[in-house]
Length: 72
Image 1 (tube, rainbow, N blue to C red):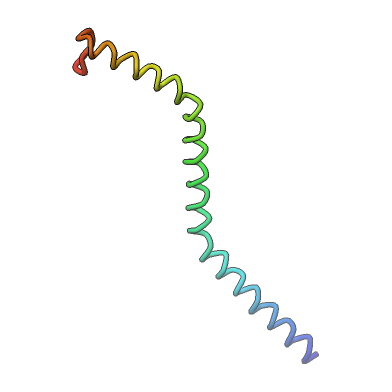
Image 2 (cartoon, one colour; image 1 turned 180 degrees about the vertical axis):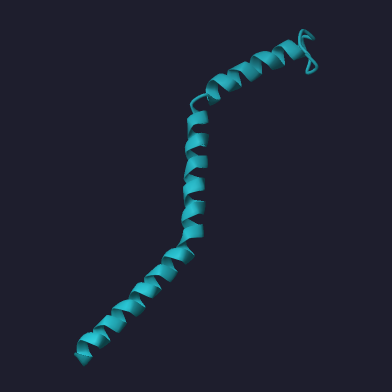
């Protein structure tokens, strides 16, 4: 009985350590999740980059010709 009680105590201590570890890792996990979302959002916008550069180039030509201004 004494050995079983000792093993039970060890398991309780290990479980407590596990809970503390999970709690301390939670902020890191939240940061990783939010970083993943930002990377995915950024990647989704990258496919539009060539079209945006082309549109910017067109607007710069219009601006240089005096046909368009930043004020509208």
